[in-house]
Image (cartoon, rainbow, N blue to C red; front, side):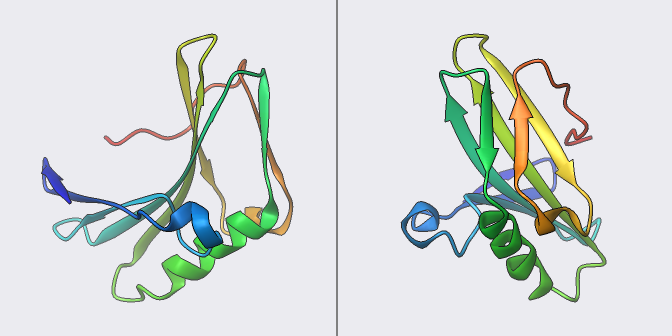
Length: 111
């Protein structure tokens, strides 16, 4: 657990074992928000995140009803490009697999 600018950051050490939890989540009690992250790293030009992992992230966030701002983000690090792409998902995006490419731009930031 780490605290940064009002955010409390948690890494879930069992996230990859079963796929039922996000890899990381961030809580901000001042903003009443929680953000769940599915984190990937690849040497390729694209990565596919299965809808089952996206659905598990959505299900995880649904347990936090007291937080009106619940956000799902897929964070992909492209090793060859030394580039992160952060993709915020809409509320229904978990219905299909997500493809993230090294040429994509981030649509989410911590700000």
